[in-house]
Image 1: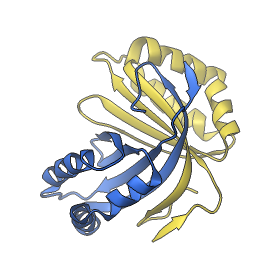
Image 2: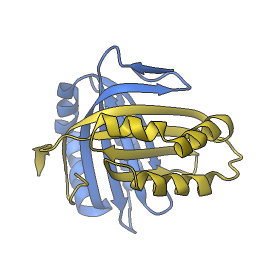
Image 3: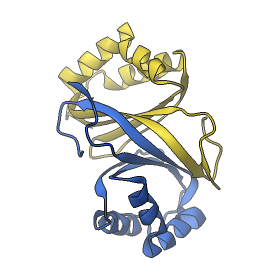
Image 4: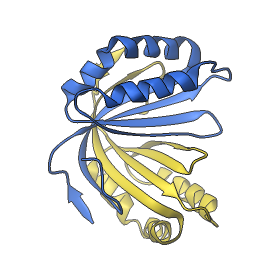
Length: 109
Length: 109
């Protein structure tokens, strides 16, 4: 059930607290998910936001270079700026190397 | 704003899909958070579950050894067993090394 990861990959953990008003957020979030899917090295995404406004989005990427390219994507840059200014009271991004994984369903690797 | 991590640490990304019936889940989840806080090497936790039943919990730990010890904690073991049998239709655990991080508020490191 448990195992090391054969082909290494990376996870970007994005945690955020939403402000009370988040006009336009849902549309932008969906647009960014659609855009990310087209990026080189994109492997998948998982996202959840609770009723208290705490959100966690984890995206998975083949290499750190792919993550850097996504971070520097122009359209994504506008969304990041808007997020910082309007939507998130707090946010944090952690870039991580997946060392091992296990579970009861096939992963994205 | 951006920076590498001075003292390395680890993230455990736990993603799950809840079954429709989850009797006893909330109490157990809260008990496990309280128990984790007392474990050696525990640095913090972030958790979110959306209305569709998708949940993401990320816990942060000083070392991989601390993660292993928490995984093998007896009381936690009972909760894991109950989760697999009763609460989660799917779950996946990824153990990750945090390589770098940035954001607009102090992290847990």
